Length: 211
Image 1 (cartoon, rainbow, N blue to C red):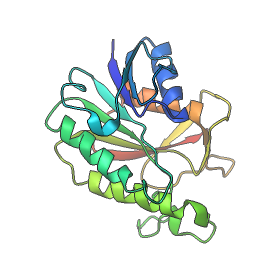
Image 2: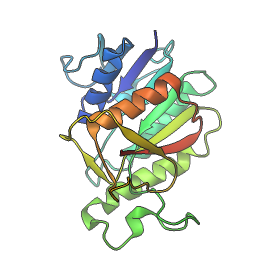
Image 3: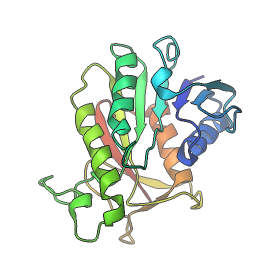
């Protein structure tokens, strides 16, 4: 049985991942700031991500980082929280899987233009995309952690249906046969848990889109 932890477990993507993992028989511990466990995790620890220690994350096969920040003041925490988790897991066999963003996916084979730099990318999301891209860039330099960064499709739908099917991509924005870049939180959760179960993309960024 896989033993996993989900950090910043209060978000919708985190809850979907927890539900998927628990349904597959994994032993899930959720770390969050809410007083009560509002997830399907068997265990819950009320603790802020910055307060986590090495002892908190010892013994897990994988840790899922589902941290998200949206305001100008908190956007830099995408980098600081991820660096903190990397420091805690440095030199261990525990995998670190990050719920990433789509804005840093490349749209050209030369990897010189990211999705966030294209004309149609909404201005509203550019600060978030930049903050997450900075975190990813710093993560790429961590050779002491068994990390995997999982980017969703461009249209990441919180309330989308669970189709049970997805396509796996890499650094470039991947479209399905209908020319779409779309995935639901539920299908993203399937891909994340699949990677925990059998994935081997250590120190790689992967991406997922609905099939």
